[in-house]
Amino acid sequence: MNRPLPIQSTQAFVGIQYGYIIVPPDVDRTLFVEQCYRRERVSILVERGGGVIHECYITREAIQRIEFPQTSKQLGSCVLFLTDIFSGLPIIFGVLSKEDESQLLKEGTFYIRKIFQGSSVIISGDARQGILSLSVDGGEISQLNISITNSARDATLNIRSGGVVNIESDKNTNIQDEKFCINKGSQAMVLGGELKTQLNKTNQYLSDLYSALYSTFQLIDTMVPGASAAFQAAMLGKEPGDYDGIESKESFLD
Image (cartoon, rainbow, N blue to C red; front, top):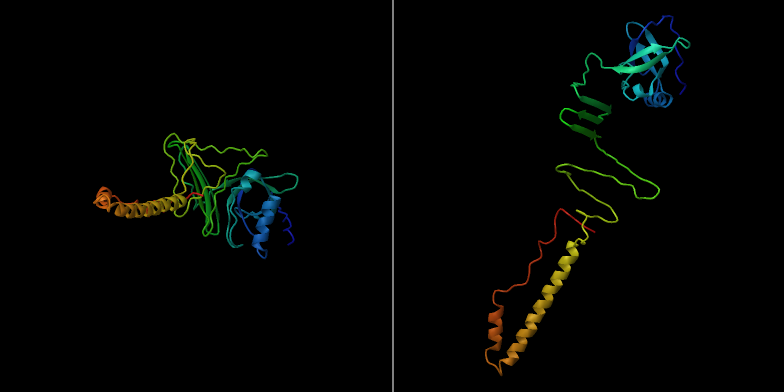
């Protein structure tokens, strides 16, 4: 796509002015927006009949705050600009809320939001209440990634709370690591499935041992009458363990 050519304006710009981010007609919106971010140049409609100006410079800070309209008939973010006396092109340095917009800020707070086709990322803070919030709503797919690496593979991520740490998930919580410790513990955790298997083997061994002993006492009955009955009385009320409920339905180890 050929980039839009600057439209020369005969108006002499004086002082700070404002306009609106636009997408020109008859261009591919996706390609145009990508080009604007890559080249840090945008097109604007100047307020109060100032006309359309393409190839406007925009600061790195401002380009991160603007929103592009979905169609060429709509207006995007309201921006502030000064005009370069040599090129005659605007230099956009700030973003204003439009008449129908408000961030509803209060003293000691900040709010940063990005929206794209129904997905949103919001970072907000309230110093008065000591709250920092990060919200990601990606529609069908959402991710929050935190990555810390170094060449020695010993990078550290520290999360500390002076009170309670809550981790809540609607589905699964997965932790993948070479070694996982709680409270700097040195004792190994038990694998529930393997423990249940070994305990069931022990139960079977004791059952077989009981049967063998009872058969032995029956043979002894010929010499010592009542030996098997005494053995049964001694074992009365004693049952093997039931380990069907030993495995957690919510937490798993490997």
